[in-house]
Structure formats: structure tokens, C-alpha cells
Length: 251
Image (tube, rainbow, N blue to C red; front, side, top):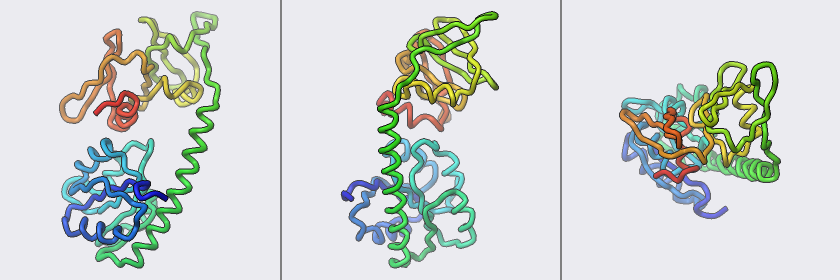
């Protein structure tokens, strides 16, 4: 592994706690520490900016705790997590959250090194799976036309003409050129057949054609929206902001 392969973010409200993690990581040359955060709110912002591969995460912090922080992260590209805490009673809950390991403070170097071996094995597996998924995506043929219901018959429309889509129960509302059509099926199933470089989710129930996006607006209190070429304004949820940042190189 290269020294910069595992991008790591340290999240602990105590300076000494973050220093102890740095010292324990000093012998692991495959790790690059890309940031430190003293609370969960800082960490949520940092994850969107630096895209870490690994989080060392304290649990009890002022305001939002470590578990709530995880719930606030996008599941897409969720980093590996090692909890580092002074409290042992949260271990079962940590593993329920799919943590790689759970380390008690003060840190014992031998125990820490065991955790890092687990991290490296999980990282290697994740890297192989990601490469395989990207290869399959690159070689997959995506549909160019889909059927929508118009009255009592089906009409074929070109995928390139779609502006945005919204899930509604067992149907997807397809919006294009000011008209709305209905396609039977789930949003997940529809997006699986479309080129992900052209269509991205901005909300649990909404996806947009990237060629139709005109602007991305941050709003008050952490909210955001996407504005399409025709002026349509759509909510951009926190869960999908990292994907939008990547697609449009938003800084």
C-alpha cells in the first residue's frame, strides 16, 4: 500500500485524544491523516470536503454524539469507522453500526495495531469490490429509451430528453419539457438501468439529468437546492450532497 492510500479523519473533542491517535498511527505508513475535528458538526462538514476513507471516532462529545454523526453521513462511500472511546458499554451498538473495531482509551499500542490490521483487511476488500463495481459499470450497456404510459397506450421516450424524475409509490414521475409521464417501477430500479454519469440522486425520491442542472444553491440552516435550466427548484438533501459536489466539482 502507498503511504497516502487510507485517508483518515480524527474526530475527538479532546486535544489529547487526537494526539494519542496521531501517536498510535505514527508507525502505520499506509495512513494519511487528512484532518482533525473536535465535534460531530465539524466532522460532517469535513467528510464532505476531504472524503476520508477511515474515521477514528469518539462517542461522547458535546452536542451530537458519534452514533448520530454516522446517521448524518451519506451511505454512498461511507468511510470505515473505528470507535476510540473511554466507555466500554457501547461496543455492541458500535458493531451494529458496522464499525471495524472498538478501541478503549487510554490506547494500548498492541491492541491498536490489531485494529489497524482489521482496517487494512477491510480496506483491501473494499478496494477490490470498488474496482470490480467500476469495471462492471464501465462495461454495462445502459438503456437509451424507456416506456411511459400515455392514456391507454405506452410511449417510448429518449432518456436524454428527461429533465428529472420523482418516486411516487410504485411509480416514477418523469418530467421532461414541461410534461410529466408515469413509469411503473421504483426509482432505484430505474436508476440501475440509467447511466450514473448522466443521472444522479439529489434526494431520497428525486434524481436529475446532470445536463439540465443550471445552479446549485446553499440555503439557510444547512439546506440546499438544485436549479434546473427551466427554473425548476428541487431540494438537495444532506445525504446526497457529496455526490453532487463530485458530479459538478462544487467546492
